Each structure stands twice: as structure tokens, then as C-alpha cells.
Length: 104
Image 1 (tube, rainbow, N blue to C red):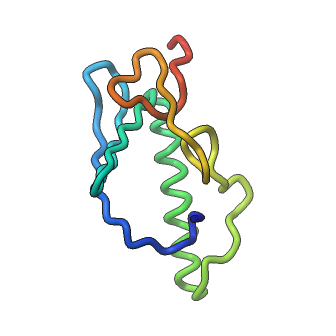
Image 2: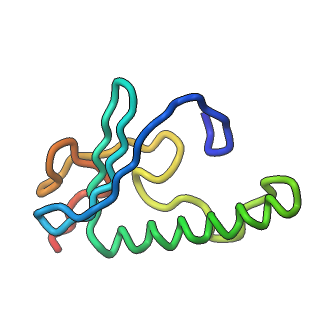
């Protein structure tokens, strides 16, 4: 399954700060839950990627198709592309996810 494939999977998405100063993206659906923790700077990068994707999607809907992503519009880093697997590193909380703690 790719980023442009339809799916019948329903899930709920929650985003918020953790008590350890991380930003958690929590995805939960029937039979699964996926907590992904990120440093605040990484969360800001993700927010920028979401805004860019929203902008490209608006342009695609006006053209009637998905079109090609702009340069630099590809997913970056672990946990953000097809086949990416969430990790579990120090200070990650239950389930872990995102990139390992880099000593910040």
C-alpha cells in the first residue's frame, strides 16, 4: 500500500505534548494503537511537511489529479515513508516511535 492508495481502515488521531517534553502523535484503530514520540523540533518539521502536502493537494484537486510532488516534498526520516518502522529509544515512552533520542 502506498501513500496514494485508498484504504477502508478507520483510525483516530490525537496529537499533544507528553509529560517528558516530547510531542506525541497517537494513532488508534480497530486492533492497533501506535504512539509516535518526537522532539519538538522534529514535530515542527512534520508540521511543515503537512502544510506543504496540504498545499500540493489543493493544487492537485484544482487540476483534477494528484500530480507530482514538488522537489523536497518527499517524506523525510524514519517513520515518515512507506515501509518505515517506528523505533523505541531512550525516553520514548510506551510504544516509542519516530527517531531515537539524540541526547537533546
